[in-house]
Image (cartoon, rainbow, N blue to C red; front, side, top):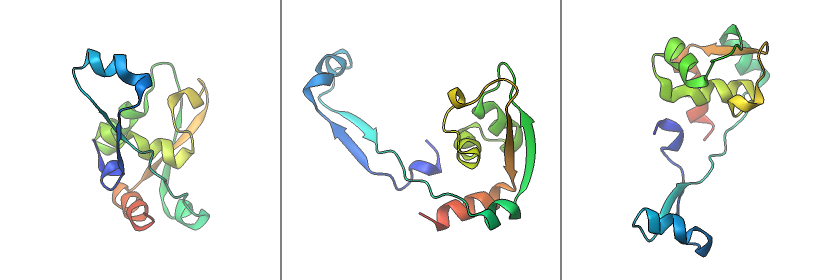
Length: 114
């Protein structure tokens, strides 16, 4: 699932509202990961990274960009996090986002703030 879930809280959901969903899957509980709290980058940290502009176009996906720039599509969330746009629905064709690099420096900062 990727490093953003390494230390996350797991929630077992057995609420009645999901009963039909659980029955379809032949399970008594659904396991969820709690939404991780992600620290914001300080201005100095943002400026210490290389940033490559990318103009959002039809067909773009965070995972495709992560695959291209990081060679790992599961790191899509780093691009979303850096740009403070959690999903592709927060982008429109023509928007410019920044691809932060180097990957090791971004991950080091993220892990030090958790």
